Length: 454
Image 1 (cartoon, helix red, strand yellow):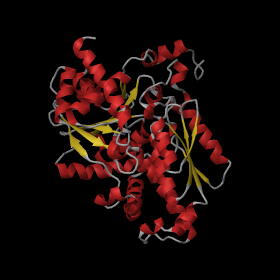
Image 2: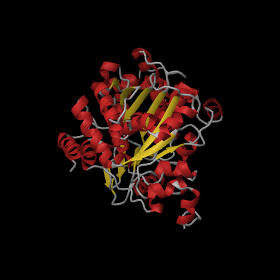
Image 3: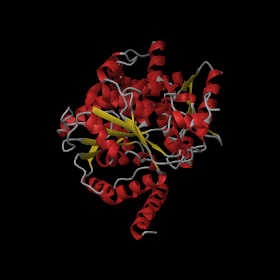
Image 4: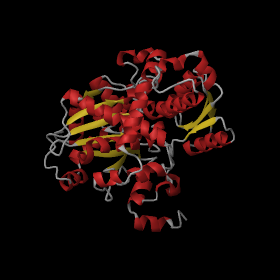
């Protein structure tokens, strides 16, 4: 029995579960999508919350600039560029055997300073918020101070009294570990079996304690939570339920609005924005989605992308059961090379927060991600990790599939000529050279086999 139903009852009530269990690439449209303004009005998270998070990051900019020289060019603001993909657009057109009408842009969170992934937004923000709270309560810091002083020895001595724990498949652990250790916190990252060894090695090189588990992400989170509960001086970063993490991600939308204005990208009814976000437990993409809907409203159409072997958020959203079901309940093994997306059970907090805001979700195979990976290197000279490629399939689905065309029609989008497709690249810049070469070789091999019919 799964949450009180037999497997057959699940398949009968929610036919999509049979598709997911068969590991088919699936495109789901959200039939519970609500009126954006109304949904936001009843949300516990507000635009003021997002703006408050943005102000906190601005207060920390002098500190970030001082301790991470790579951020000096942007004054200590951790942000990534938006770039146009003209050659990749042609590749996607070939894939779908028709012209891609809208422009295709890449949001390069893969190249965010400090930890090289989207997790640099939420993970680093939560650590900074914790540090600010401790420093303010100690009386050594005031809101009007220059936060560069937080790099002084007196603050490191203060933060050394506290510890941070987090469970991670990889990238969240990197962001928490690097930032926590830099401030002086005793930091422990509980890593699942899916996490890449190079990520564990990098954390250890920064002075972070890494604990490894043979099980998946959920077990690593459970272990981290248990450890923190026994230590009143330990802060647990809860990727499944943290409002602080979520708010850190939402700030991306405020920054993106300014980037679009600088590029002349218009977002309105006649110029719809389609955003494709790789999704694991849901915190990163959920926070970004919430921010985008808060900033761009009905004109932002957001879709999650997941591996066929780890479709936890699609499963939770499509059934409405959220964290009460996991992919393993349906015989799905949660084994994927897209380690950042290797999550079997979705965040209930995120699922319930965005269930009436998300436009849809889709799954794709690891091989599909590898093909996009190699093509992006060949055509645009951009290197990402496999999970960061998941967003590319969305362009083909929205412009080239019947489901996509039905979605556009239902939302009064009569032409894609003025549409913007934004693929969110979630990680890859810190991948070691030999690992990048192996990723590329696998993707290139698949592309060559396609060409030769092998």
